[in-house]
Image (cartoon, rainbow over the protein chains, first blue to last red):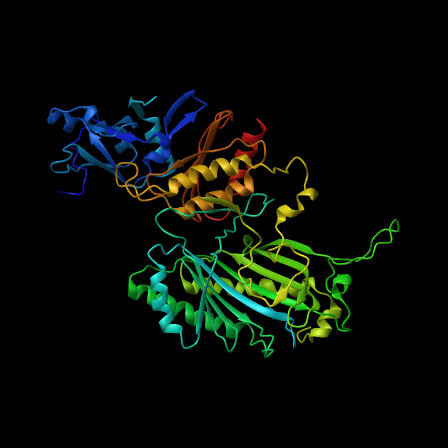
Length: 125
Length: 276
Length: 164
């Protein structure tokens, strides 16, 4: 499989990432709980592409299945690409047909931009 | 480069060269036995000590308390000790733990060794550090990636006339005047002084000097001495042994200059200063 | 598990000296002279240290893949370095940072309060990224820096967090 962003995942596609409870911070400035930028620092950031989930008759529940206590965020692929990151589908056979990688170095600026461009799909209380 | 202060008979009792590096988490206790086989002809006795915590010299803040640290003992992996390897004839010591490689030149009470000077100790350290690094590579245990270096001089100071230095620290260092106001008639029993300084390179903070004067006794004959420890510590410019050695040379110069600056002309004459 | 406060550096600990005046260790700790410090700065409790250590010890136990993806185990040395940096800046009134495990294997110290966003990502000793934004400043642009051993950039944000 090519290690390049071929654009097969559209900019509008949501990319879903699980967030551990200890990677959620209290932002008193905004009066809300949000993911820490530390959750997005992996240079090869694993996500599930919603378009690929849909193609297999799945939705965001699949991304959280078996991960009790985790929350889930969505970032549009176009947000990642606008930051210079590559969005590359990487399905895992027999396990995860929607697995995708957001590749590229995540500086604090880029990681915080990903946070700013994210929204909760599911936030554990 | 200006020459360093030099003394015919410096009061040095121990010189310690210490290299701290990223933890070699694959290095296990059992592996150390294999390394000991390589050095056993020189270091015939081994023992285990409590591991030393890591230190990091950073700048820009205000350090009021010493570095906090964490000691962790997991349920699954016992803590890795600090291994001592001793040369029973000379008293020299090699110390190894998962993130440290240390060489001590030690004055022996039994044979009063002549101090061979820093360069000889440094060359021995360099050879042994490279030997350790090569062995790690052959065993697939990782690389030595230094992140801190330290040079420590331990000096035991007596006075030329043999009187007790504990009550006359002002003869050892200009940091202490020995003077108290007229309101009391106390007689000083002993004085301890602790000092921390920054040193710079190319206009930027490069490391710290820690100097400590402490009243003590020389064990073999219980002669009162003032123990003066001077440690120079900082981060090398690169992550290899060559960069660490370069920094150690800088640290040594800082330590020696500090030693000369902190001690009195009377003591310099007693030790036979030859560069002044 | 055990916690400790490090003593003065003494890698030698082998000199043939019998010391009748010092305590068990050859060198006294700076905290032994706390009576000579200004009361304002003296902080015998150091609550921040207890809180931060609690998180770091938990993160030290996390195995690779702890975030359910391909995260490496959290670097123990990153945690120690974080403590060392905080030691130079925290004051009694400074808010305690949130301590977050990073998906790249480091730790992140962060504050989001009083109109300030301050983050210090620590991948390992001397491998840090600084991020600061003061929303009450006329120039509300974030400042992003790579830091190794000089943390002067932290002074102003910490002062603001402490005094606002």
